Image 1 (cartoon, rainbow, N blue to C red):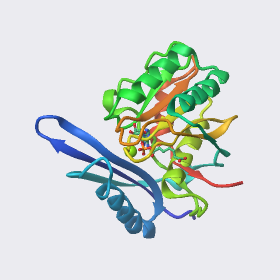
Image 2 (cartoon, rainbow, N blue to C red):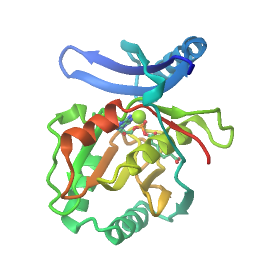
Image 3 (cartoon, rainbow, N blue to C red):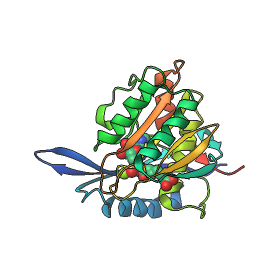
Length: 243
Ligand code: WAQ
Ligand code: MG
């Protein structure tokens, strides 16, 4: 029999009576019963020592998942592009996304959102041609969840591991044309573009140090079945493993 698995999710926020809620951090992991405690500790630690601020609300959700529903997939290949300026890094990202079929207008929408939005909790889903935003989640966006590595992979730091797992799950959907991401953390300026053919292309610097805007945009094809796409991203458990 397969061992029971658990999805463990965290979200942390700073609550200000005048300004409302500021997103601090989130995290998604999958583990066996005996891994719940160390994973909860790691997520609490991630929420508590964060460059975006001091969390005064931390929510941790633990849910059992059916092991026979887990999908296994390999990670995308990693490459890194180092640019000499933010402008050059942006034009490199645009060039790659254009070559994958993302329209100039959709790129403008995505770059504008990621450059100006300081409080996005999930991803925005954009039609890759029209640039129209398809999800109706506002600042909440769509959170890719139930995602982790099958085994600890010592090759990367925690941030790269998380982002690579997420990008690999996103790229695995036939509706995904490409993804653009950079962090909303003020101390992290590297982001990436990814898809199933080009892999995970890290690009630096996509923003200036100290800046708290960032996010993720998933560019999708006209054929997208939005409900099943969002259900896959949020609910289908995925473990990343090398073949
Ligand atoms: N699902 C959807 N969107 C998410 C998720 C998720 N599970 N987690 C984060 N986001 C969105 C959300 O809008 C955040 O504000 C934004 O992405 C940035 O999240 O060197 O650290 O966790 O190879 O701050 C990428 C490069 C780092 C890593 C990305 O993102 C590397 C990063 P952060
Ligand atoms: Mg962040």
